[in-house]
Image (cartoon, rainbow, N blue to C red; front, side, top):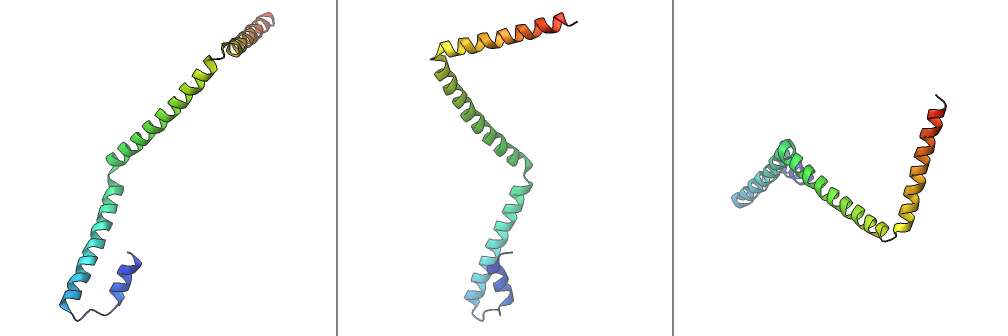
Length: 102
């Protein structure tokens, strides 16, 4: 319940019928907003779809970043080749050392 609604509840009722009708209309609008907010919270399918859409957007952004970095890296093939060779040599050396200790 908003503070505006609380204030209206604790104030004396207006004598003018038009003011009373306006107050009733405001209260109905507040109630409608509250009901809509509660319905949105309980709509699991809509919340799931929103989360999935958000995840899809974030995945697309991440994929674009990876694609851009990969394109930048591929423009410099020598460091990539050196890194691949060092990694391969390390893996082979580790395998040979393990085999010799058996």
